[in-house]
Image (cartoon, rainbow, N blue to C red; front, side, top):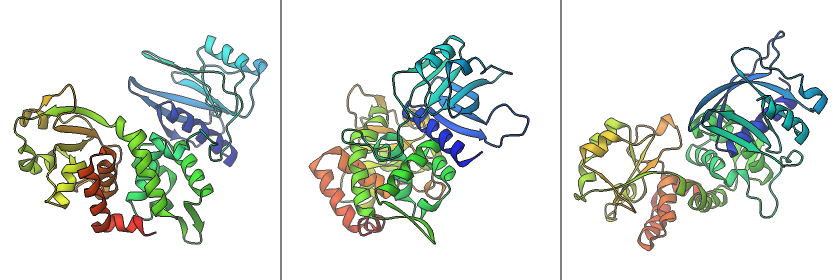
Amino acid sequence: MTAEEQDLLDAALGRLSEAELQSVVIDDRRSPDADFDAVIRVNAPVGTELYEVRLKKKVSRSSASAIQHKGDRRVLVVSQHIPDSVAEVWRDRDIHFVDSAGNMYLRWPELLVDVRGRHGPSASRPAGLGQPLRAFRSSGLRVLFILLSEPNSADLPYREIARSSGASLGTVQWVMKELEQLGYVQTGPQGRRLSRVADLFNKWVEAYALDLWPRLTLGQFESADTAWWTRANQTMRDEGLQWGGETAAHFLNPYLRPGRAVIYASALPQRLVLHYRLRRSEGDGNVEIRRRFWDLPSKASQPLVPAPLIYADLVASGDPRLLEAAAEMRERDDELRRLSHR
């Protein structure tokens, strides 16, 4: 695959990510006799689908009919821009597509994504006034979290950053381009490294509170025993769960008494809920279970989520007591001092 074709594919994966469709490249090694350029898996809340990707720099209505289904896998056409006349032909024939401008059509049982009317491919430059950067949208914020939490991770292969953040490869590439253009990533003889880290960290914390933080709640619960969490460390370890927010801050500073337990989990931990008799709460409960949106093996066995996330959770709460705790944590915690003085 040429660099131009790779850019086209990555741009399309980024657009799918913006539509909350996570995509993974399964095979990008085109054989001489293959009539497709890559195989990707697209994941949605209602299921998953394998696609044979056909990269087309330009398409026209006269060439649209040349795209045919072959075999069991669906076809996904990727192009810089798909005119409305071509899109109409492919919708009628159930040919799925996505272009660099963000027009797309995917239809499965219980899923329909149909975006129309976007003109021309978007440029790979920072967004203009009123257009938020990808780096500071929900999927981009997950990428930034990896870069901020793991020293030297900016120099990792993009696929490794994508795996750790749960973002698509296309999203990672867009984010890294934006960070380079804004001066937050520099490339030199020693590879890529973060620059102006304190400013980037501050911007990430602010954007996290506005965009990603509200999306992470898996469930709000109530417990009549407000001290249950003080006896739950072994259960947390057994279930692969981690403390976050004000609960994690308490373990760092016992003088802070948390008003509620905050837990990060890959999925709702039913065994913990049943064992400690946690009851669903219609509003804010004294137990919040939040989605773990990263995969960092070096930190997976730790009882607390990474320090940047503890700090960001405290700030996002808006509680004056927790804001004060966040300020103290930023002064005392080694990892936060590293982020604050670079």
